[in-house]
Image (cartoon, rainbow, N blue to C red; front, side):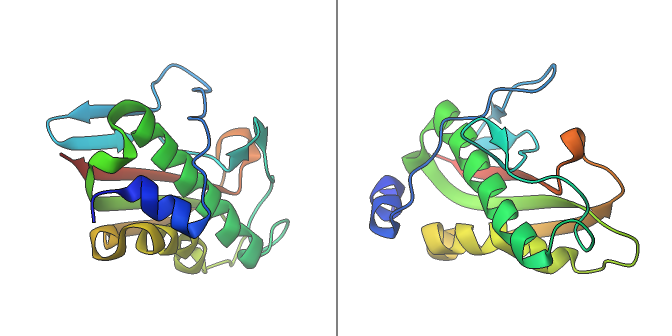
Length: 152
């Protein structure tokens, strides 16, 4: 399937506007047939959806939904640069989880992003991935996700 915009409509998913950069960078860069996104925070409607550490201030279940929002924002950045229908494959996902001491459920949190890519792209959404626990993220966000996709 190459009409990913149709698949999004089938799923009832609307891509948000690409989030404006919070510092000196661009939301996405294309080199050849790859698009690399900047790290995306769980921003919706111009607002950070939660703050704090996963495993203390934010539940793992809520963080998983926040990772999904990060992934939607990453797709919005891809779409703004190369159009969603040009996506051939999700290549790599890197997720960062601001983790409370002792929290080791980062993979489950980042599944929020990975599962979204599977829903939308099917086999083309299967990707390599890292899920990393960190002490702090920008703006005290609980989750940040960056993506590399192949485009036509």
